[in-house]
Every structure is written in structure tokens, then in C-alpha cells.
Image (tube, rainbow, N blue to C red; front, top):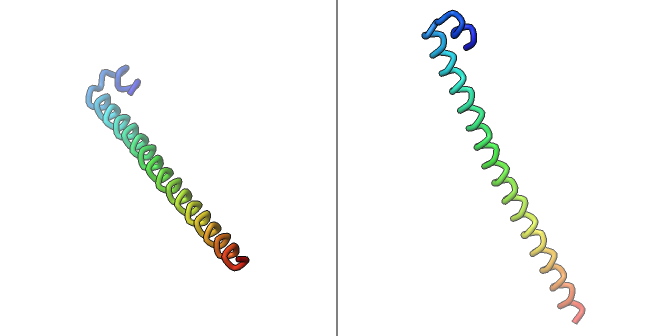
Length: 68
């Protein structure tokens, strides 16, 4: 873009602006998608942990029932 400004090439300057804008939008989109995927993965792990805790409680309850 600097070269375009120095040479007063308006077409090259506009092309550089568009390219910069597209690159910026792409980076923001990537960050957005990465955030969504991390949230989904976090929820999945939380659900798996909750299921494991439920299974452990059931196992403990069954063991307690057998002792009685």
C-alpha cells in the first residue's frame, strides 16, 4: 500500500485496501470459529464428567445396597 501511495497509483491502493480487509476478516472469522469450537469441546468435556460422576454415584449406591 505504501508503494501505491508513493507512486499515486489509486487502483493499486484500492486493491491493497481490499486485500488487507479480506485478510482481517479472515482472521476474525477464524477466531470466531475457534471460540465456538472451544466452547463446544468444553461443554462436551463437562457433560462427560457429569456422566462419569453419575455412574460413580450409581456404583456407590449399588455397593451400599448390596451391603445392606
